[in-house]
Image (cartoon, rainbow over all chains, first blue to last red; front, side):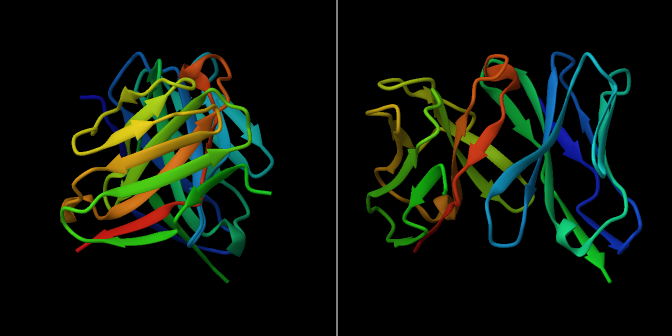
Length: 111
Length: 116
């Protein structure tokens, strides 16, 4: 079946460094790729997304890159801060109500 | 204020018992979803609904039923709970942007269910 693979289960960076989280997907029909953040003990909330008609989207310190040929998308966080520490989930919408989530990447930002 | 509210936050049930997880949303969204979150699996879709009175099976519906009596409320029902259903359950509503295929999901705070 359709899969979204999130390659890093854990990522540790120093405060101020950049972090990159990578995801790949299997279904070429995927057209929308959101990212969600889950802070410790809390629920998930939307942080940024990208649609298949563009290959880059930036929102403040967050940038999402999409490589449709490689079926790969990534979240780039610059100038990381301790409050960026969380689990990040990538997802791919396949059409209709079908959304497949990655398994999550725990980002740890240390001072 | 929270727009998607789940209850209870924590639940301990016995094997074979009936469990009902409740979800209420004030977003006035048509679409609602139930997911479970297990380590290493991300979120997996159990049931969803595109409006009052409708329920549809997701990817892992076995052992679960759903009910959507109104726009605001969506329940997940475990008629005969089993230990394998021990998990964290999230309810979400979808804003329908671009159709369901490109909508943002708004999640509740989750219910941690333990089945002994």
